[in-house]
Amino acid sequence: MNGVVLWSDASQHKAVIWCEDQGDLAFYSQKHRQSFVDLHEGDLICFDLTLQHNRRMAENLQVLEGAACMGLAHNLTVAEPDAAGESDRRQNTAQVIPFAAPVEQKQRANISRRNCLG
Image (tube, rainbow, N blue to C red; front, side, top):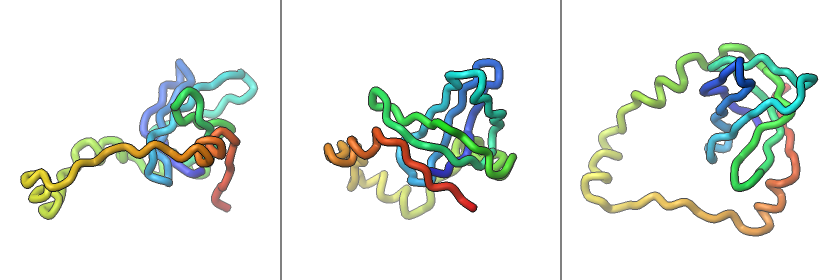
C-alpha cells in the first residue's frame, strides 16, 4: 500500500498515514530499534497494511519520496466543500455511514500486503 505521512512524532516513533485506498487512516508505531524509519509530514511511503484490533496498522515502511506532499494535512483541514456538496448537505438528502467489511475481506486484511511503486 502507498500513502502519505500526515503527522509524525520522531521522539515517540509514531505516525499517522493517509492511504491510497481512501480508507481509514493507518497508524505506525515503531516496535523494534532495528526497524527505525525516519518519517516526516508529507513523505510518500510504501508499507504493509495489517488490521489489529480494528485499527489499520502500517508495517515495514519504506520512504519512496521525502516531502512529496508537504502541507497535505493542512490542506485537508482547511478545504472548503464545493458548491454541489454544500447544497446536498443543506437538503439532508444523504447520510454517510461506515460499512462493515465482509468476513473474507477482514481475513485478507490480517495478512500483510505490499504493493509498492517502482
